[in-house]
Image (cartoon, rainbow, N blue to C red; front, side, top):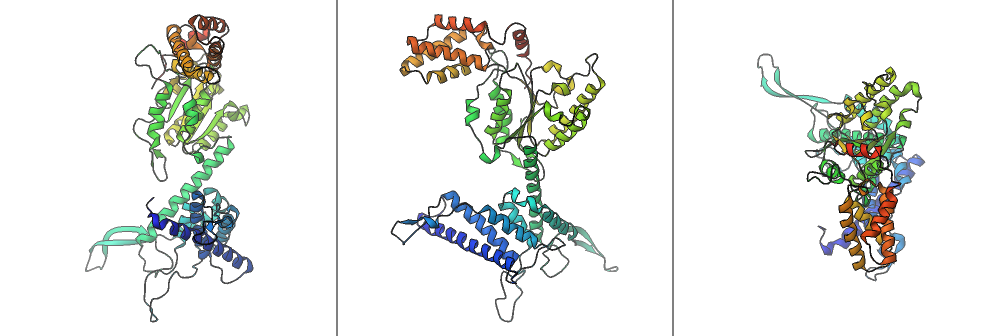
Length: 532
């Protein structure tokens, strides 16, 4: 957007030529190396690779259709279209670059990037590339997965960095008799191609620190991907923020809807998780720092069939984070005798995740109340192990995690108290407005005027308000769909939605609904247990 309109065509042509020239140079250098030619230069190879990837990615994202066959005729030569950079070529070039690495971790000097300006020569500074700068740029532009085969090479370079620190004392005072100087020591690095003055340089030191940060970032991402794959997680981060699933998610009330202070589940998650983490500050080597008021953990409790898993995955998509679900089977994978060690292993792996929504689904058996009479010693020890593991995961502050349960009262009091879980949220059936959304969805397929549909929606809302706390409030998601579908059928058949018809539908469905009797009493008792 900042490019002048009359220069846009020239810039695109220049980028296209960058792709072509860097591609040719990349292939040439690989051919030199394969043939054992002395013309091979690992530095030229690396920067041809960087140019090819950077310019090629930009042009492929712009959707370049190709260049004109003849300037000004408007006919495009499709063979000149720029496609995405070739992944196999990138991998081959990166492998060739790391194969040239010296035993001490540094890379060959390569050709100078400039020569003396005069025949007599003049010292114009460092004429050679500092390999640490090259590696950090590769780490910045290439996907972490490209470096998985070269972790040993990165470790060797890190070894060179650790053993080549340069110290210098900035003198504040020098004793004239002893000729000793005293002051503040500084530590840094210098390019190995510079004259060895024994002093660190600011530019080289900054490149080393940037490289170390990029190494850490790359390794953390690879660990994240490995853990996600190990526990069959779902990667949403590469897609970015996805609103569709969250917008379709039906909301539920966190307490008595007749009270003014009643909040909805989606509003609380938006306030405590989505908004605070939407503008996080990335801290190198640590976790993301969200805005004030954020929550890293929550217990989701309520009757079965209230879409607790769907809520967590929809939240992950809304935030653009990855999602993983840990259930009882994960902790039993090594057998009953090794559950405690398995708990430690699983949580250590989960601490490697960054910006991920983690759901612990129905793991009550590992968190039972230790005060329960007759509870076996093994169960008490498992609860203690789980307490420590949850506490460590919460302190890491790298991901958001939920514990979903249908039996909140079965948990040990130390599990549910503030500190390990920031919130305790009742997940009930869809609220009144969500029921209206269900009817609107069912009416979409009904052949009727919009006026008839709007009247039906208004009648539906008015009726629900009058009988809400009797039966309708306790319909689960599927039962709500059935009720809304029957009401939509009435509109299709009779051209209207009468109160008598809704009363008859409700009476027939209420006799077989899930939340009734003792289950309903438990539901009502749980409505007031939310903690924000």
